[in-house]
Amino acid sequence: MASIDDPETQRANLAFIRASMKEPLLARDHELDLARRWREKGDEKALHELVRSYTRLVISTATRFRHYGIPMGDLVQEGNVGLMQAAGRFEPERDVRFSTYAAWWIRSAMQDHILRNWSIVRTGTTAAQKSLFFNLRRLRAKIADNPSSDHLSTDARQQIARELDIDAREVETMEMRLAACDQSLNATMAMDGEAEWQDILPDSRPNPEDVVIGMRDGRMRSKWLAEALGELSPRERQIIAERRLRDEGATLEELGRVLGVSKERVRQLESRAMNKLRASMMKRVADGRDLFMEA
Image: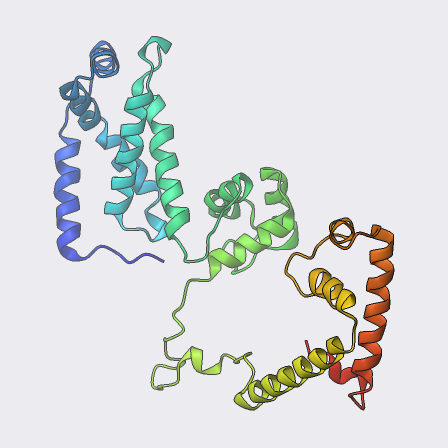
């Protein structure tokens, strides 16, 4: 989760908020005139006046999302981006107040920023999950039998799922995600200890002994295969090499054209060569399982 602003940044944000709240509200006709001047003539002065007057809307929206742990300054910056996008797309002829139109862009910009930065694990990748992320707390307070409880009851989850038209399992998953926060693997397991969480993670990689044994067994299998291939005829070796020992093996039809035979004849030759290889390899080991690498 993102860190909170430092004191100096908080003071700068407060000064910006105070200055923004002092900007005068725009009359409807003046607002539309500014929007037309920016849209039709590219008048930057009109754009700046329009944006400054509605920065208070950005700040108001940011306060609604402050409990997600994202710094207020970041939310305001993202909201300003949404405000600029709204100014660029606003159509004065639709007879809608700019504040009504801009509110959607501001809220969307902030929500996207929160979802990208709330956790190092991406949260809310679908429209349904996004809606659940931003509405779960409100619906939980409204629906839960015991709001102070750490977990929702099964009935409460199902009711929230019906409210948002999603699966109840998604509600349970999101509830667990919101209840947990990101934790560094370098964090100590106890306040007075030095052991870190990463110390108890299992290492699934093979140990050095297994690596050496695997390399030795691989070399041995390669030697057996080379000896077995040497017992095949030149045409059989060619077929096996082209069909089995390449990343993208040749087709029966392609080999048939090269060898001057039908693709059915190539299939027969390949089958005979594979049987020879199998028999030759089996003579070299006591246990047929030694021919295969362990999964």
